[in-house]
Length: 246
Image (cartoon, rainbow, N blue to C red; front, side, top):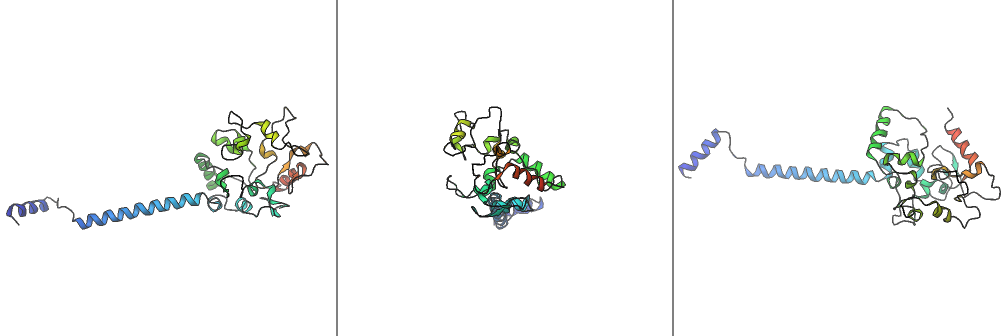
């Protein structure tokens, strides 16, 4: 080694600027790479878990009521979210939609309908942490469920991913198409014969309890059989009264 190079190395060490050995640099880069890979894997795993019903039951609905209800066998005797027996689980829209051949996705999970809105999640999470909620939970209308998204309640069911055949040219629910979809039935529940009556889809179609024909609240329809597992409007009201009786 020349005297000039030796002097440069001595001067560099005296100034505290000695370069780090290449092996140490390589080791640090390898560790950083491993950390990045682990973080990506954990993030991907969290995203997959977030799409599954177990995420909902673990993080929020820890009482399991809604998820257990959703996971029931289709077309069998089951239990609603309040613990009442349901003659046919298909009368609960959550169970009826859990597996379907009507869409390109055979298995429907919670977030396919309950799309996560981060502002809403933060709001509900805060209420959960502070205990600012009651059980059983108040039943939400579609309008309330879509309010965080700034969309009409009907878009919960009638949208490009679900009941698209009910949409009009404006991209909104076409009530004429809704009426026509069940016109072949002896009693058409979607017939628009009450001009001043505007009903939410969930007035009849219940997610986690037996659905009901609201019309039976005023009309007996004694000659019209309810769909299997469905209940009359008076029976539906009785279910709520018993569930929320303090």
